Image (cartoon, rainbow, N blue to C red; front, top):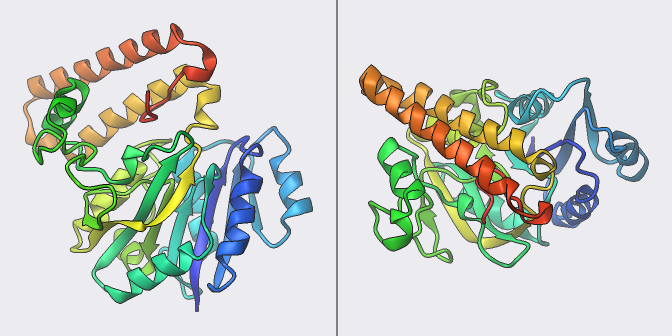
Length: 304
């Protein structure tokens, strides 16, 4: 049984994918791993280039772009998950990430040293050198989301109550238990996948990583942020090409996540208010993005 099945979903990602794969080739030198690339109907020559330049990767071509969750599930199923007899763990990785030498071995060693860890995520650093805040997240309850989108979390970033959305009260250089890591780079225990199942494909993009982390945590596993490994994340390289559509997808995923995990706890009226607030925020973000130059536009949870 090999250590890790690395799953990468691509969609017109060729500008960054070579750097990602070159870094992986070095990182897997002392790890038993196999790379599965699922291409979601790219039109930038990605499949041809992979076959020509990276024949050591297992390529899966989809005829349509069915979304991030569906793409990851194709890769996970190709590796034998949710009950794999070939791989102990799965690493979900974005094509716009770069993994440092030795990183996979460190993640693997820490995962194997503590059997109660279900998901392990490294510290992700953006192109500007700042931390990708999504790599250590709290459960986005309605209250937590309100504190975040109202800006209260910026006033009280060290508060475990008000700063829960991005867990800003957790030192970015300290190992910590969190509610969720981010799908851009997270190592998932195969045993946990076998119990929790694969990704929920009703999430086209965004929210699916929160969902699977929550499902795994509910089974008694820990979700751990592990900053002793630091990876690069050139965030939004695919989604920024269609910012308005992706903003709608992002806030649509918020409504879907609420409906799945929280709606039953509230009255119809409260749920209507929550969905209405999400719609208002979505329209505001679209308007604000439209006033910016294209290179400064943000998508979803990307930093402003």
